[in-house]
Image 1 (cartoon, helix red, strand yellow):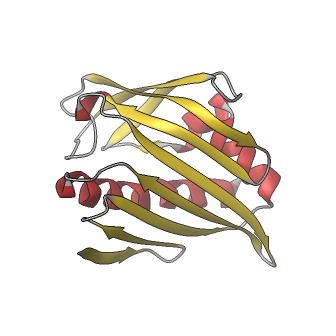
Image 2: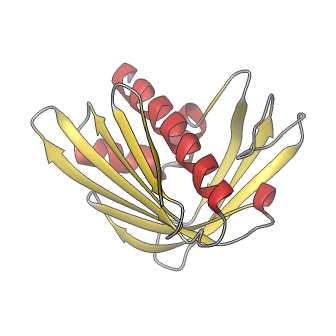
Length: 169
């Protein structure tokens, strides 16, 4: 069963709750190399990933190479099913699988609020006449439809923040 599509002006997402996958497409007003750097540079990640009143990433640790580890330290504000709550620090950690700038980034995703269950995120970046198209596939949620739905909504929100931030910078 495919869950309903979720959209903002620049971000479109669908989710397949049976397969446990989320597909998100975002049109970004920046060239692929700028998009790739903003997705991998710890200083830039901390600037755009999060929003006051919801949750904010406080610090990123990144070893950008296949097999390299990454960690995001998040401070929850309001929270929801897909994130930290009540001001408590949460973590998301993972390992890079593929690092091929500026077109492909693949990594594992393991958040503390999901018991550190391991899933996989694949980001493909391609040039467009107006910047880049980021296609993100998040997989590994088979048998957990509630996490598919929560992460679909989360990715729309996160890539909306990303698109807005990159347009200003």
